[in-house]
Length: 220
Image 1: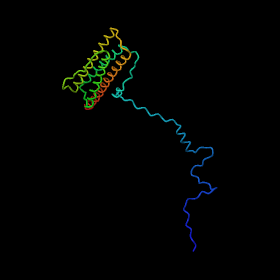
Image 2: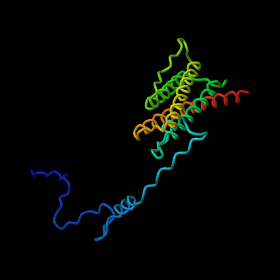
Image 3: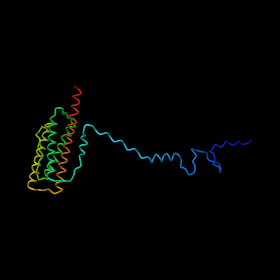
Image 4: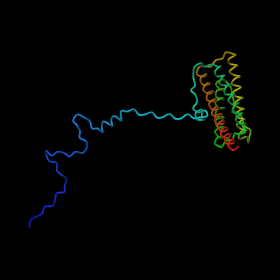
């Protein structure tokens, strides 16, 4: 019997001189593939800058105030620190008025934040006073004092400290007493930080009062 050879199922062998089957668009010698050119053109195009975020309406937020402005070292003098102390004292007065607003309804987390900010502000004021030769001990709060009453007591303490700072600065200016550049810068930074904490508190209270007022007006 004649042996039957099974069909060859292996891939076609590449024989010399047999042209390869085309797999895509033909490539002209000396030119780059069309896909490569389009890719390079796309890579060369500058990417569009992201659109700026919309500005928040209704003034700065507490977080924006927390960042604070940069503190300049130009024109350092006792008068500039005296102006800082006066501004901080006025800002504490504003916070005191906000605390007495009938529409102020603080959440527990907000109360904790106000207490922390006012405490930090008073600490910075004491640190500035110590650079001026003042001993400003932390006021002892009456036992059982909490809530708005505690915040008002902390504000009164801060204003008393600032009054002593201003009195000391006027005394030093009258006697022509000067601080070193390093001491003056330290006092200015401490007063700037105190003002920053006070402004944060004022902004937070203002937002809370505004929100509660809007809710009340909507219900009417």
